[in-house]
Image (cartoon, rainbow, N blue to C red; front, side, top):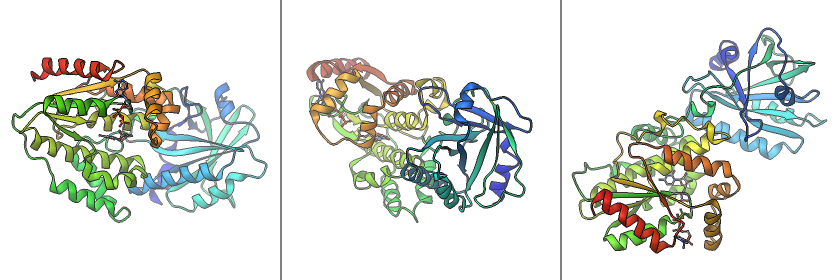
Length: 416
Ligand SMILES: Nc1ncnc2c1ncn2[C@@H]1O[C@H](COP(=O)(O)OP(=O)(O)OP(=O)(O)O)[C@@H](O)[C@H]1O
Ligand SMILES: Nc1ccn([C@@H]2O[C@H](COP(=O)(O)O)[C@@H](O)[C@H]2O)c(=O)n1
């Protein structure tokens, strides 16, 4: 309660709100002030005249509870609100301040029956959800705390004031240790916090404990093959295993396969912690196997970070963290490979391969197909990761030609 009161009164005015009105453009930014200011044209569109407008934000101290509540509300809103309501992702943040984002939604109810109010009434009963309503009056719009029954006693009316675009897109501010993990303990602690709600977490943590990385001396080279789905990783890694007499490993490792579906249905905070821990288990296997033979790894940290960043960041490629951002730095405690190769093919060729393969597509694969923006962001994030950075390989030629190209690179870079 204290936390929500603080969010309402103290912090609200210093915050900027970002509403993802149209994913192909910048979000609409606004802040709140005690004096009315004329709305820009774009804001007039968002705060439509005669529509019922609400925003709601989730804030609570327990991060796993917060993440799950946000995911549940998202699900509920998209399930319950028909085509008469528009629901946009909205965040309240302090410009360029890390971890300042409070995630939420903006609802534009165009129905004649106040469709959204019933669901907001239910959601508002939760202490961690704060609902605001917006009233348009000519060129001005104000925000106040919303209650379904009577006006909120201490609610202060604040005017919507168009704000400038933030230097760092708000969705980049909370990535560290929420979408991408930079040390094992951070991911480990998230799963520890989930053991009551997700019993499988205990089993995953047990596997991590059992297989913790043994220190790796100078062994054989470790080569990671990365790329979007259907770029030819399996085909190439199997051919490399056979031609180099190498050991082939994957991340996530086979021992985590029984838990993958369970964690894939969780919000990013938990899902990404699972994949992060998978990399540490694979690292332990690499440490052991590289003493005996060269090791080829199908997906590793580049995949974990690139998909997580691309999913977390709304809208366009330009919204990604800047190329020199610390978010692209390899975790210090994770075993580094000697070489990372990124397979790239044109979107058309990749779709052809996906269709030819004719397998079931995961949700994310299906999303890649329909969401050009997402695909571009994953590829760009792959390319920005540093220490080690990846070398790009054109994987459009025949499997034999791709193999030869890669063997040549391995000979040059790893002297194999
Ligand atoms: N160089 C190539 N030229 C043409 N087709 C290819 C080539 N490499 C792989 N393929 C075909 O493309 C499809 C996808 O290849 P593959 O399964 O190796 O990709 P992947 O990157 O491992 O995919 P995923 O990540 O989804 O498992 C397969 O049907 C495979 O036979
Ligand atoms: N090291 C990894 C590997 C995978 N992921 C996540 O899994 C999805 C792709 O896996 P495929 O089995 O379909 O190749 C992708 O959505 C990644 O989010 C990961 O995070 N880290």
